[in-house]
Length: 467
Image (tube, rainbow, N blue to C red; front, side, top):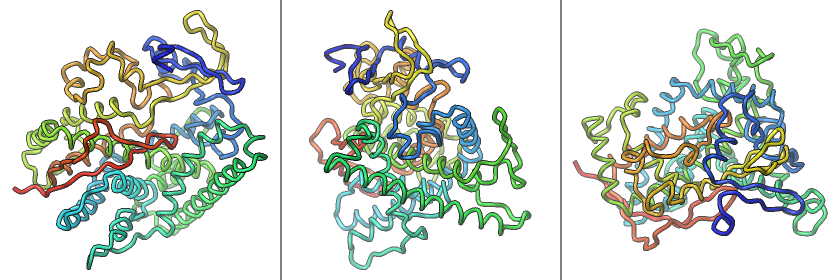
């Protein structure tokens, strides 16, 4: 559609108008304002009955249209993504990645290939579950055990239903598009479609019940912990203790200076999972696809690690040192540009707004097409070429609002720093531990679309680095 209609066009779903933009001056109107009072595009999408049905229309952050509730929840989530949290995340990610790579070394000895997509989904699940709740899902262990390598079995995780929960979160994310696109009358009354609708709603109920149980257990754990004993710094604990007697840094948002309700905690922790499970692990899979094909880039990463840490043997990773990893950061951004997991992000305005002489009515969904911008030769030279150097040599010449992998302004992704920290940790550990290559003859990775672009069939060979 972009090739046919350009950087600004409309399409209709039934009688509902949708606008698509991929021009930086138009994107600035949507993404530029950095304060709530100045932006007109505060809603994620126009009003949708289906979004309310899956319990996210007035809760959490991503699709919440209750602006007072949205501001409170976002303030709480921003508070836990402070440097202290990121430092703890590095330590935790280190441990999870070390365990994953021990499995890869066994697979290497067996002469087997690594199914990157499957393994990195488990990595994301284990990092997010442990960081969010303090409980290990041990998804990587379950995957390793399923390979049935003789005399090689590991213990399972301590989170009962953990892997099922991960699968249900993927299904929950998948249900969003269905609920947005299919009118309620069709979803509830048409054969076959109504069975899909029921599957998604049943899954919603199971996810909420599991989260409710998880929050209740954590509340009891906190109540039974003496004040003199420090609490484990996971996201769920921080959400439950903020603005309570266990909290040292009180948070106030507008008229609010109170703890979150249990329902609010459930909504936020659910979005930590829905936002964290797919995006980072998918991006890392795409990244490995390109790194396996670009040995020169891989070696540049390794050299930067050596320059920054002075060693490739168990370097001491710190949040402060991550600011020096400029080339790794460029590799991350180029991976996000050349194959974005989320190709476009919608927004809806609170009032009428003018674009190029056209009046866009209030509550009309405006999609920003990041894929089209990222592949536009006006903004990126040789856009189909994987070239991280463009984010080093050409960084200053990049036009604002052309490349926004985490959004911008008041609706910028609150988990962006956490995602970058996870990816930097993985890349440093990868180049220190293995050499990789691929037999894939394709120039671009394969994927299946499930609300996001989920990579499939990315296989690599690993060889443990000597020295």
